[in-house]
Length: 162
Image (tube, rainbow, N blue to C red; front, side, top):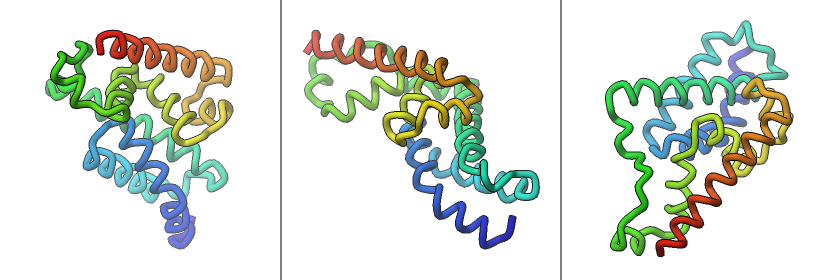
């Protein structure tokens, strides 16, 4: 892979990868770090990566990097910010719809969260998501259905208490 090809790949995919990481992690700096690390890995392994499958490789690498990041963060007890408890009355009125949905999505297991974001935010097909995450399309559909049901049920619970 030439330097010019690498630059074209970065320009073509950096926004999508950043958006995916930002929605997954919920933190701008962490998302930027993950994307930067992924592009660094791409450059380091440029001779071993097929240019035709680079998009799939980038999203797979980003997904794995985010999972590893969360595991490292959990080891240091930084994951206290994700709580399952329903907000109290004063907090309910402070949240807007977007914030409630983002918080609900943040509670999903990592694989379901990735699939939901790739399908609903990035617009990937079931086959593309399956390629990225090494799943078959029917598994992707099942995980997506479960993720959507969890979000729906959580939103019903929040709406019920509102």
